[in-house]
Image (tube, rainbow, N blue to C red; front, side, top):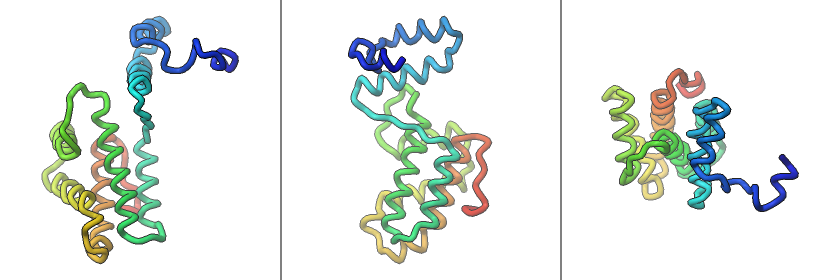
Length: 168
């Protein structure tokens, strides 16, 4: 494979969706087909996509909570985790959403997230969007609640994931 990858005729992303489907079906690995097709389409469109597992995202939340930096910087990091969790959850859908709120609304309904938790998540979304214009002391006070709200979102999007004791 290493020798093959050195030439341009076998470069990643060169296979069409039809070729990927045929190969994965022949090998009996259809679930891989969908992932490979999605990644190939993203590469062809010039978009780099990386996926994080729920465990990775929870670890990132723990790091944010314990980071020795100001609340505004923590909110920037938290916003990235929040958006990745949402974007990864809707990435394979054939629905065009107008923004983060529309994606979140869909995911709340699709995953039957209880109204009290949905409210916490939406409140966190608002603060995440307004973090750069919000008073630092308010951000500092709200941060633990917003980290927990993002953790709750992850537990509902990735079934079977529990909130780590350090975030609960």
